[in-house]
Length: 116
Image (cartoon, rainbow, N blue to C red):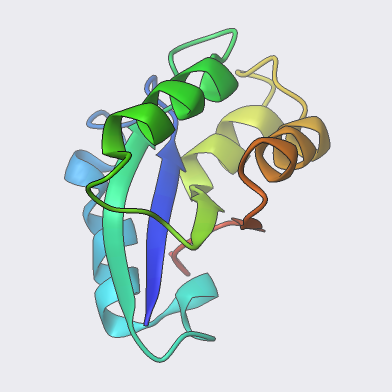
């Protein structure tokens, strides 16, 4: 089993993808980029912090907040973040974001979540 943290776009969350249901369903059913794991436990969904993107400070705070309670094995960059960046709506650079998350957490970072 893998414990997953999903990073979502706060400008899209609950506007286009209501309640992150597609990510949660894909994780539960092992679809999309979740398929390589035998079981996925989503331990958190962390918003980006709104443009221009404050993922790293929020991730630092999240790590401190869960200290002693839980941990995560892998970080998924939600499809909403991918879409927002590729459409030009988000100023973050995807490759830089992935590297920054890897450097901060030492965890695997997977870009994309569900197949829809």
